[in-house]
Length: 361
Ligand SMILES: Cc1cc2nc3c(=O)[nH]c(=O)nc-3n(C[C@H](O)[C@H](O)[C@H](O)COP(=O)(O)O)c2cc1C
Image 1: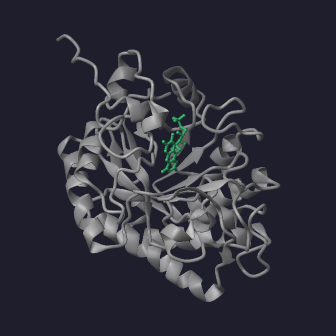
Image 2 (image 1 turned 90 degrees about the vertical axis):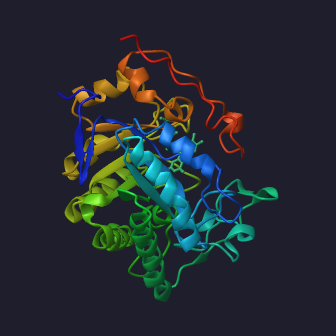
């Protein structure tokens, strides 16, 4: 069985190791959602990852509801991403942009209009806005005649990502955001071609993924799902049927890899009430499978040894350890992450986590 430090081919990308960086929203772009110089330092510090998945990046103003998160819909955003991607490549790394439409969890003060979703529902809890936390608003169901435009927004963002130099894109279909709001029957109450049966609920995922694959190549298209349990009020009555079916759809399209965020029952960033679905998804999906949530060096290597996964994404460990691959290789201690600076603006808790001293020759 491979080691975490063995190379792996992820579609068109040759990753030198299997320690990948999970997508992490950090709120260091501008209020207009334009990437900044600070982000260049942050991402290039982490170029040792087998592959970096960027923070979730808005495909459109409608889909972006997180303060100071970046987007990929305008020329200004594309131009601002170019030096960031260039710096990662110069440092020897590879980087995919995570494409995001938040659906019902976009607050109108950011999205500019009532949020959209599969159905008329309201997310639980409160939205992050420039005016602090505010209650979520009821979403309006997307009309059938709006879906081609939505798919067009994904295509434009994917094409923009390639123009900015990204090696590929990851479609964010996890964590209770728009595509997940279509996938799971706890949020999707439609009675048209996008609701009801599993074939219908996976239709948007299929169409978006096919469109993005047609734009940038299936071998540069990845997808993230979160099958086991509630995410921002989105849940499914039968994830063990739904998610292997969704994985089979993605397998047919031939994407570069599938990443699953599956918290454990005692997870430290979400606790799942449902067992992991990844063993069933492994059987349904032919390409590389990447697992995430609460992995340590030992647990990650054990997952590879058991052939449960081909690679692992690390979130908080990468946030706090720019040289995570080297630290894991040397079994060195890890810096703990500081939650207070997860989403704060500025360099503190962003680009100042220390790297190890170089190993003695
Ligand atoms: C600060 C922070 C920001 C996150 N932002 C995103 C994001 O933009 N997109 C996403 O898919 N997941 C996001 N996540 C979830 C992580 O990708 C990952 O699933 C989670 O941290 C569990 O992995 P870990 O135990 O290795 O940290 C975020 C998590 C944290 C802690």
